[in-house]
Structures are given as C-alpha cells and as structure tokens.
Length: 380
Image (cartoon, rainbow, N blue to C red; front, side, top):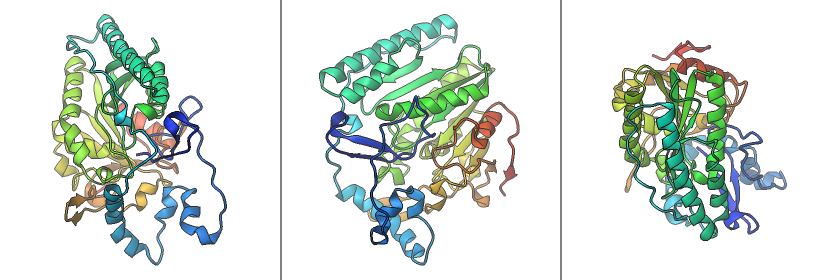
C-alpha cells in the first residue's frame, strides 16, 4: 500500500509524487521522484511534525488512542467522500486505446512466449504514443521503459489506470513460480517500484524460479474509502482466479505461490477458495477480508509476516458499520485466532519485504521454494 502526495507545478502533470510506502524500498533503478522537504520540528506543529517520521508515528498509542482508533476509520471514510483531490491527473484519467485481443497460450514454450511478449510490446507502444500525444509525459516515459525489448509482459491494458502481468525469469523452465499481488496505490505511474521488488525476488528464487508481477486489477488509492473496504478486491477475484488457473494449466508441474502485499492480501483472502496454489503469503497485511484461515477454504499453506517497523501493526483491525456500508478489512493475519503460520520478517517497515539481504526476502523465497522459513510459529 502506498501513499502518494502530489503538489507543485514543476513536475510531470504539474505534480511531485512522494511515494511513502510500497511493496519494497526503492533502489536506484526503481526510486520514485524525490520527496518534498519538510521544515521545522516544533511541538506546536505536532501532527505535521509526526508525519515526516512516517505513518506509524501517527498511530503511536497514547492516552487518546482509544478515541483516535474509534474515529479513525469514519474520519478517513468521510474525507474520502467529502474532500476532492485537485491539482493531479488521476491515473485512470490518462486515456489509452483498447489492446488487441490475444489468443490463449496453448503451451508455455520459448517460441510461444516470444510471440506473446512481442504482441504485448506492440500494445504498450500504442499506449505510449497515445499518452505522448495527449501530453501525459510521465505516463509516456513509464510506458517507454516498459516497451524495452528486454521486458516480458504476458498481458497489458493501459486503460483505467493500467493492467499488466510482467514475467521475471524463464516461465517456460521454472519449477517454482511466484505471483506478486500488489496493494493500494500501485499502477502504471508507480510501476517501477513493483518491478524492483519482483526483480529482487526472482534473484532470490534462483535460476529455476520465475516471478509474475500481476497488476491485473485496479488497486484503490490509499487515502480513499475503497482502501478501507474489500470492494475493489471482490471486483478482482474472478481475474486473479482465472490467471492462476491458466498458469496452473500451462505449468502443472511447477510450484505456484502467491505473495500478497498490503491491500493485495485482501484480494488473496477473498479469492483463496478458487486458487490452485501451494502457498499464500500475506505481508504487511491490514486484513485479508476474512475472519480466519478456515474462512479462506484453501488447501494452500497460509503464511503471514510483518516487520517490526511496519506501521500497519498499529492500524485498527476491525470492521465498523456506517450508514453507507461496512468499513474495515477484518482480523489481523498475525493474530493467533486468525490461524496463519507466522515467519520472521526482521525489523523492516511496510516497504521493506523485498529488500536485498533482508530476513523477509530470504524467508519469502524459502517458502515459495517449498522450504521452511526461519522464526516460524504456528498461530492457534
């Protein structure tokens, strides 16, 4: 889940993007534009002074924590409805042509994959030209990078914020395949962050491992009502199930696992009954949209992990009924009553699960390879 703050007139589309948290920390090759500077640390600006230390500082328990927790969800929901976002082009507002219909893959071979990658590259180039003609320079630059002949996309649709499935590693020969399901705020305009984490995970899996970065749905914006409800996840359940089913059909001997980050874990939790996978990993999860592992109705091993520096731990894991619907994503996957298998994720924050050398990345790679992670506890 990522928080994007946009302001200023000198950056693409008149914005400066500050991505506060994503599926991994940004390396030099996948770093978003530089954050805005913050000034002052005076106590009279206590809420704003806390903000520059990250979202976790805002949720630090204190004497008023009970009142804050009760009002938090309702306040964010009200803001999402009542406060318009101005001065920024919404990702879904960047137009793109409909991609050509692709014939289903009959088999996963070097030749068939090369043909598919070429076809999707053409769709990306068409979307790039459309964005360029409309003056969306940031989107055009992102698409230009995606159109590099070295990139390999199983699918691409530039409409409505963008849908992609990019392959890292050799899908035709891999005996273990990880599908990354990203969380809120992920889209074509922030795609470099998802790409960086996918590259690091593929390296950790080794030559016989492949990763698919599956952006096959429209994740909600972080500061929005949608990020507090399972609605967007429910809309995406059929697409995720269909993708995993097709992958299992094409590579029946491969071990397939899901890595679900932040809001992506809500989608995985809701889609679990129809997923043919060996493992489902919930990282930095605000909730999986279900009460417990039993409600997921899956034969897969369900794992959960959270870094000790992840501010998601301080969010209220609950559901609150409001006049216009239910807000909240359910039980904490690390709670004993949820029933997941817990593994050590180190001291990283919400963005650090796929950082090179981290305990989280090492354990994620071990689980997806069929090996036991370190620091395991079985919740009960």
